[in-house]
View 1 (cartoon, rainbow, N blue to C red):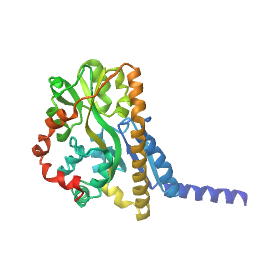
View 2 (cartoon, rainbow, N blue to C red):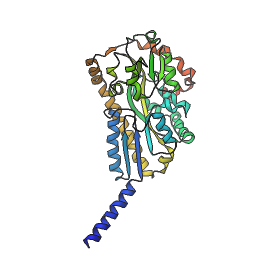
View 3 (spheres, helix red, strand yellow):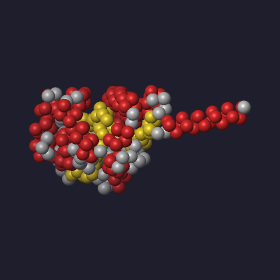
View 4 (cartoon, rainbow, N blue to C red):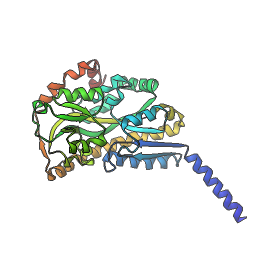
Amino acid sequence: MKTTALVTAIALATTANLAHAAYQLNLSSALSAQDPIVQAMEKASETIAERSDGELTVRVFPNSQLGSDEDVVEQIRSGANVAVLIDAGRLSEYQPELGILSAPYLVEDHTDYDRITSSELYQGWVESLAESSGLRLLNYNWFQGSRHMLTQTLVETPEDLNGVRVRTINSPVWIKTIEAMGATPTPLPWSEVYSALQLGAIDGAEAQLTAAEGQNLHEVITHIALTGHIHLMTGLATSEQWYQSLPEELRTILDEELQNAGSEASQATVDAQDAVRERMEAEGVTFTEVDVELFRERVSGVYEELGYDQYRDQLTSGE
C-alpha cells in the first residue's frame, strides 16, 4: 500500500513538473548581474513563478551568456523561447520608425517615454514589428541611464572628439549620432569594450554609468563628459510565435510583472547614479560638466537624415 502510494505520488509530481516546464522564458541581457536592471529581472522571475503556480518560469542570463544581442535576436526570430533587453535603435532594422526612440536628445527626462509608449503611433509600430519580423516588443520602460562620453582624454566640446574612436551600438541612429557629435563611431559588442580600450583598439565609449561600472570601465578610461546625449530606455523583445503560444492568463502575468519590473529597475537606476559617480571619482575618473547645447546642435540633423523628423512632434506632444 505504502509502495503504491509512493509510486503514485512520484508519478503525479513528475507529471506536474513536466506541465510546469512547458512554458519557460530565458531573459538575455548584456548587463552584469549587479546591475539594477538584472536584479529587477531576477525578482520578476520569482513573482511570475509564484503567480503562475510554476507553470511559467523565467531564467535570467546576464553578461551576454546567450550570445550578443544581435545573435539572440536571430534566435528569437526563429521562434526560440528567449527575450532580450534591447534598445529601439537595433530594432529599427526590422521596423525603421522605432529607431527614433534611441535618437539623441529626444526627451528631457526618461519619464517622458511613458507618454511616447502610450501613443497610438508607437503601438502601431509594435504590432507591425510583430507581424513583419516575428519580434514581440513586450514593453519599453527599462531605463538604463543617460549616455555619456567615456574617454582617455578630456572632452569639453564636440571639437575635442575629432579623431576619437568611440565604441557605440551597431545601428544607424547610434552611428550617425556619435558621428554628428564629432567622434569616429566604432561598433563593438558590449562585452568587448574593456579589452578594446585596454589594447588601444578604441579611444573611448559612450555608455550609462551603471553599465560602465558593471564592466569596470573606470579602470581603462580617465574622463567622463556628461553629455547625456541619449536617455537610454530599452525594452524586452521576445518571439511573437512563442508569446502567442502562451495561454492568455500567462501572457497577462508576464506582461504585468515585466512592466512592473521595468518601472522598479528604472527607479533603482536613477537612485544609483550618484553613488556610482562617487565610486568612479574615488578610482581617479574625472567628470566634466559640458555645455550640452553645443552637442545638441551638432546632432539636430540626425532626425531629418533618418526620416524621423516627421514623427518627433507627434511622439513628444503625445498625439
